[in-house]
Length: 345
Image 1: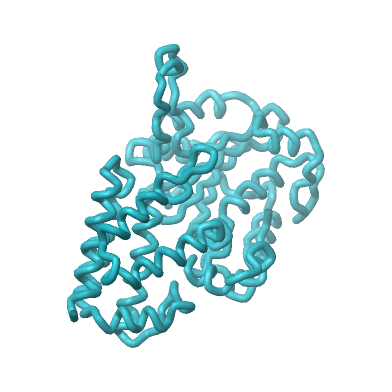
Image 2: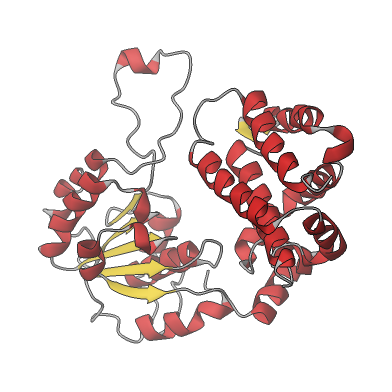
């Protein structure tokens, strides 16, 4: 899918099909459609019928294979893609392993056979890696060797939400295309097609990134409850609110938690960030629809205390994926926030 705000990149790249560089890096904040664009470009390069700047036809053998996830000339490298060694002992393990958040070096080394044989359809061969920042130093160096000596007819497409976390040598081997925040009117028009209510507020909370806002729409009512709890922290206390939020962590659908600790930390980070902006006399970025509550809360806190709280949240976020006791984790985080906004009391 090519979103309207990304058409300029599409026209640029499809205008040089057959002359594309061996490695492309799509960089920009999450939620702007980079992954959709990358898949659409891969489909177009592999498609056997589309012409010019058309999107992939969706009907040829190549398109059908890609849609089915079994195209012989396409590889998708993501975190958790090499979790099992296939041993009988591992298969019989009762508790499933948590999916890795890193792209493992074995996944990159496993591309050797793929790169050292001819293409099955006598066309291009594509390797899509996302997110590229999920590679550690050793994994990135393994990929770097492949980029330094690219195989014929091979296109690497890397996607990153944070290019600063990539090795400079890796960046230098790729042609970088930046995917900035979309135009607000285009983003809002797109979001309103799937989120008719509170689209403005949800886009604001997602930092102007429409796909991120669409993904978060299911949690909007929960987020409203989250903000209401923060406004009532003096009356309810951190312990009671932590108990309520812990119950959220236990809710799941299809085995996946509906909300997790990192998400709650990010929500609180955004709130504290807007409090600091209000303290400086600026308009909130993420909570424009809660302007009065932001200003009232900010008035009770000192600017230095808000900065300290935000820095605390950065450290808390760094350990939020660890198997910590969720209740104690939430109580500690909320206690730090409560001390920040109640100092004037």
